[in-house]
Image (tube, rainbow, N blue to C red):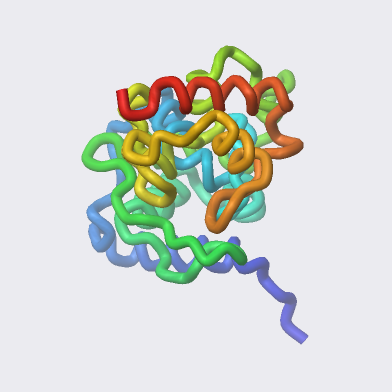
Length: 218
C-alpha cells in the first residue's frame, strides 16, 4: 500500500513541479527579495493565519508553514524552490478552503517586490529549527499596538493607525468596537477569527483591546 503523503507536503510538491516546469507561469521566480523586509511583511500580513516559528506567529487558519515545508526541505528542496511555491501561492492562492473555518486566502496580500521579499524570507526559515529560543514563543507584551502587529491581526483587519488593510475580518476603523467586544473576540474568536486564548496572556489581550478601541476610526 503506498505511503500516504501529508496533504501540505503534497500541495507543496505539486506547486513546485508546476512552477519549475513553467518557469514564469506564476509571475516568475522571485529575485532580489529582502528577507528582513519579508519578515516584517509576513508578520503583518500572513501571521494571523499561518504558524512560522522564526516569525513567532501561531495562526491556525492556514497551513503551518514549518510543517508544510520541513519534510520537503529534508528531502532536498532548495530555498529557490520553496520561494517559488510561496510566491505562486501569494499570487494565485489555492482555492480550497483553509482548515475547518472555511476561510479563503485572498490573492496578492503583498505585491511587486514585496512578493519576492516574503517568499525569500519564508524560503530561508520555514522548517528550519529556531536557534536560541527564536520566535517560537508567545508574543511579548510591548503595548497594544505592538501586539496587534506581531500577533498577525493586520493580515485580517483594516486599521489605519497600524497601517493594515486586511479584508478577511471587519474593518476596525468602520466598526469602532468597544474594548469589551475586542476582548471577547480576541479571547474566544468568531467565524474565521481564531481564539487567541492561550496564545496571548490576559494582560496582552487587555492591552490590544485598549489599543484598538481607543484608536479605531481616528
